[in-house]
Length: 94
Image 1: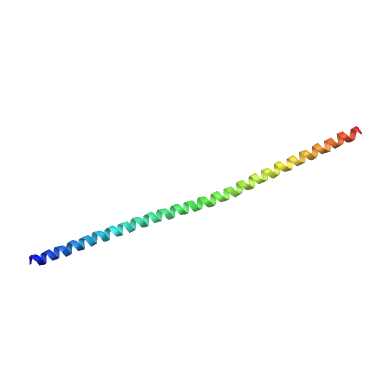
Image 2: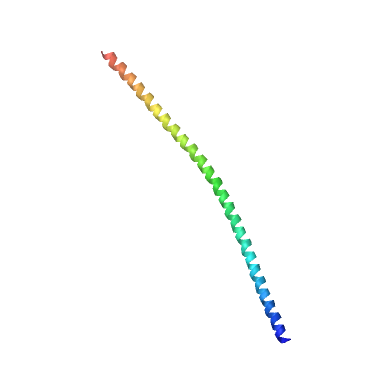
């Protein structure tokens, strides 16, 4: 019976080892799943922030474009006024 008991113990030990390995694998899978969920959450946040950044960048670009056009328009009006004043000054001297 001693050999039979040894075999049973050896098989039991192997079964225990397999059970431990299986538990570790399951735990690793669960940990990996949690990390994947965290990464998905972070990716979602980054995507939202990226969209918001793009929206703000477009608005800011439009704002500065409008400022540029306003300044250009103001300079043109100022030049036109100066030209008209110069015209009248030169015309009045003739």
